Length: 288
Image (cartoon, rainbow, N blue to C red):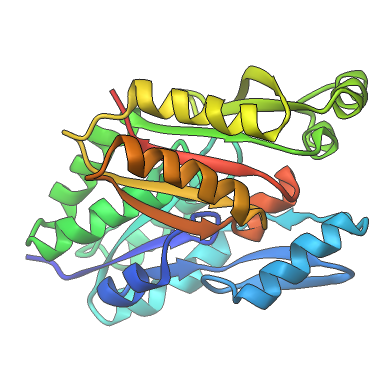
């Protein structure tokens, strides 16, 4: 059986203990930290994350940059030279061009290494949804699944991944073209917290609007409670953009209702946080 590494880009959220246990690899991505463009090579330190979200609160305009096909080739080739194939989970093609770039790199590398494989997978998701999927892939490899079997299993469950999240500041979504300027202005004035999801084609869509944080957190819990399927997997990711009190509130509700759930709490990665702003809370799981 071919030996292989498992990688995801740094738009996904996962706990460090899982990274260390299963030797997960990361594809670097760039984001701005104040005036500086910073490269994220994996999970960022807590002080960097705090500085990033405080910077947003103080008016920093945050941005990210795409991974090019050449950058993918540069990252994957050393593993191929050592005889490893690559299973890679990419940020949703509905949110970024990273998956398409990885596919172009795959074609180029196949000519040089015909006996090895690079399998990019379009997660159709981000943040903790990628965490749920990549944990499954890591456990699959531990169980002895081949790279082809592992790829097929992940592709099978991707339609069952759900991402529900709330945001505090509609202006970040406005900058990304997700809401109009008028909607952002009125929503901010009325303390409206939009509830969004990543849909079946990997794009953002608004599904509800709540007044205030407590109602928004309760709304996220209701979506989770009504859709969570423990038969598919009991790992749930709750990610927050430097608002752990709100994430803890949601985690407590989840644990009280479903004692067998394994809740992974993480701070939202800057790659996604650059486009959602501070105060965002997301819950991701395998669903009906």
